[in-house]
Length: 335
Image (cartoon, rainbow, N blue to C red):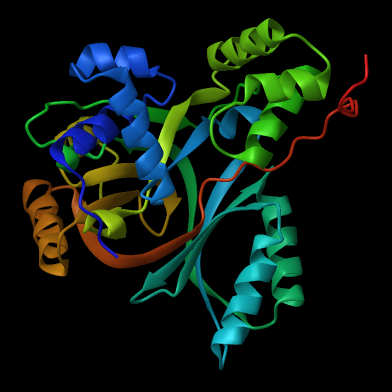
């Protein structure tokens, strides 16, 4: 069901995206809207399940490799489909699961420590769920960028983005930091400082300091909101782009194009069957075609092929696997 957002609500949501840690007072000063109206609007947007808060954790810095897999499965009933997807959600390593329409039925993003672990995991997965049909469409994802939903406020020239990339440098975390990351992952949303302070038996200022350290260590990239685009009356598509060049100038120009385009909300660089995955949100299938044609026209010297995939539903969104800590969390009420 499409829900109408007033202009004020669109401005508030647009400003809060990628800036989820901004207080209502800070947003109020930036937007010239009373803080109580900002709190009320964000609460209403979340209640209507248009947007959900989340903390963006840099899984690369924790030693993970992200591999995207397009797949389908054999099922003869809705109950079987539901059963298979629930079983897939039971695997900690499957950090994203998306239902698609078109050439592929589903997409999953898998976190592993390396290719041998990926092969072992996929062998187990196919044994556990024999209905799976893995397509030869696999990509190692080495850089992910999120952009604001610029179409919410087309007149505001905001090209903000959050990017995290594969790196050889891995971050070593102490036990409290591991506990904090695991707590955020389990509870979703933004960090609940009083709850974590109580769980781990430390003071709120200690939790605040650890959160700041995690940001400085590039483990927490930022705070944002995941969006249900259908409730905003737009449709998500993934453009899978195969290039014939690794020219750095092309990559820089292409990033700048995505950064400014009203409909582009995400950009993934990868190695595999294609080199870029571009997430767009548009008002119609014909508009998705126009965006694809525009990209090909502008970058035809570098792009070999663009395949368009319709996104039906985000079943699991950017989950982070649990990190093993060396101590158990304290129970409530312990000293």
